[in-house]
Amino acid sequence: MHCLRRLNTYSHRLEEFLIAFLLATSSVVLFANVLARYVFNWGVSWAEELVRYEIIWMVFIGGSVAARQGIHIGVDILVKFSPRPFRRPISISLNAISFVFCVCLVILGGDLVAQTKMFGQVTPALEVPMWVVQMAVPVGGGLMAVRFLQRISQSLQDGDDATHTDGIG
Image (cartoon, rainbow, N blue to C red; front, top):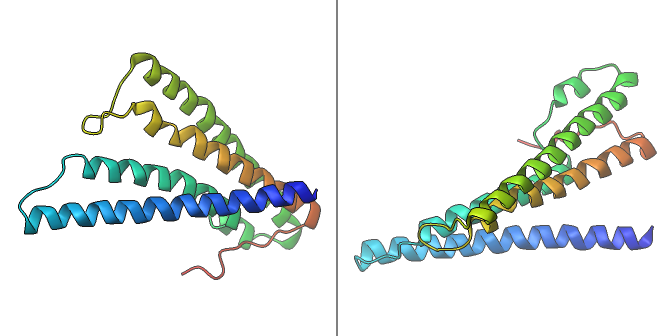
């Protein structure tokens, strides 16, 4: 159990580090390209493409962070306005549906990656294999699936039926 908790902590840190790194590099690349275009009348053709792909990865990794923190898009209104005895089963059901959706993302995303890899498609400006970009779908889906399983487990053990959206906005 202690080993799982430690692994969970490392995965939290890795997700947050990756998001911070991608956000920082995309900001620097985009700022440098805008500066180069408007000040020096010169720019690099691959900057926008790189930033676009970094944003795709940020979205899918960020989905896992949101699922972990309980702020993922969901049907919280059902849980909030249900009578107390129904909150826990509704919460578990919603997390289970989200888990199934994420498993579908992993399976279908994996199929997409395999097909793209088979055809050898590359990105237009960076000439990076397109499957590297598309790996964000199964990787992010897998990370989110794990987080939804953790939320289901937490609800079953603790009876945690509270929504975590009260402090948002």
